Length: 232
Image (cartoon, rainbow, N blue to C red):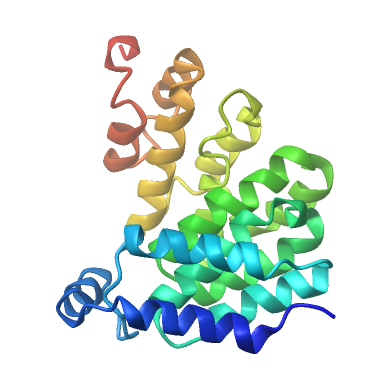
């Protein structure tokens, strides 16, 4: 019969409204620098609701998965978008190249780090790891996209991949965007390199030193934060 989208959305909205805190909503909205309304429900208060949504609304097809994620995503409050991403990340069977257009849409529409980074780290990353040939054919285009959040996502989508990181691609992406003045790109480069340094510190140190004149101070400091002993 498929997923009942109206019921899923009602459960999400009612569940958040039941534990809403107006004072926290004001603070959360200010912290995120957005006009989007909040219920005032921090992550611990959303975890069980995500679990309940995942238990009770299980998509059987790619189309149902996309419809469910987008139904929650299109609700007006920020926390409802967090629920959408939680549900999207949970259903790992749909973390395939077929879902990349959906994930791209979430990144472009999300357009802020709290939403974008969740998609890149928990939805795009599993796809580029499991299906590198097909996935990179799609994601490679992001590194030169006019949309800054897609460029950021291309850089950070391997954060946490550890030994499965495509290091050559990571270094190439960082080098390609090293000239940018945009804070979120400079920070992304530093973050992605710093995380990979936990797996291969010598490679990151070599890259950082070789490209020191091209990397911003922020990117270089972040990249070498925990490997200063390897930096000459």
